[in-house]
Length: 437
Ligand SMILES: *Cc1c(COP(=O)(O)O)cnc(C)c1O
Image 1 (cartoon, protein in one colour):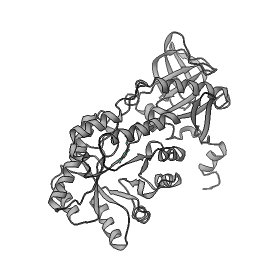
Image 2: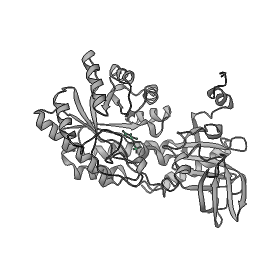
Image 3: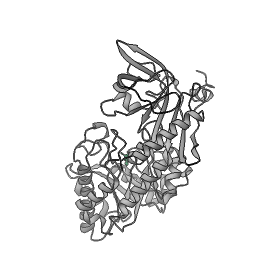
């Protein structure tokens, strides 16, 4: 997918957002979600796996990538479930109407109360470590549950290019490290002793991890499942959860790698996993949403310092914290639009695109070549639909921007409110407005 159509939809949405007053002098920041693009990504995921296996596959969207209920509802309408990792995320999935049989709870720090709730609901749970498995032992003994239960393992294959997002390192905090001394034997014995332990989970992501390493992680899980089943003497493990982690191309509109490439690679590398003897679960997050989100920010001032043009906009650390704090790992594209929302032309000029927060590093782009942004223009921060504006960072008590889903048709561009902008009253209330020390 080269992304030309998505870019055209984005241009139309920016224009319409200006014309319809979603952004303007009094509303200098908004976030836009491309509903058509989200649907297309969900369909691409589903069809990519359907093309390589007849096994049942639950695609559980990793809620943390975009924790907005209308987005979860949209994805559920496309046949997806939810992967949740906190009481809040579980509540969001439930609010979106996603049933327990389509929900998976992972997290490295589940409390007994969280586990009890998940088992009472019948939500699938992947235990992270031996202590958590012991808690499950007690809960399963105390009352019947419909929850499928599994164990997360870490194949300890090494890191990708971003260490903070590499889950399969030797010392990762996630799962049972399979290469640690005695671990493999412990895992086999754990399954042998528990008829209800029927799933195996791994997540070898994420951004910065090459597909080949991800596939190795899946193969390690498959080989372990086969070993467990052979040694237990029956198909104790009936479901393998492959995790998510497909990286996203932040450099252009092209979607690369694709789900189709990954599914085909998995099928080639781990054919036994796709022959129908295991049910499958996936947990993709970033790759379903990132490219479908745009932050649109008005240029409040255009200035120069030390000869460098600087566009001071309303989009900064509050909507793109990772980019501001780790710009080398998380570069984002910026598109320039004029004050009427049309793509800006003109000779590219090296400039900084700054945010509104009061620290010098609040920059979304440094020395970036763009048509020169002037006061009243708009900077669009692209590919921010996952782990971006949905993850507000409340620096300077900057308000959470409104999020609007858009669809483009012949009759025009239609916006639906996904999340209303945070009000000043809400900021005061959430900041302890009624409390006294
Ligand atoms: C974060 C996470 C995911 C999703 O990762 P993406 O890189 O967003 O696809 C899936 N599973 C688990 C267990 C995670 O922690």
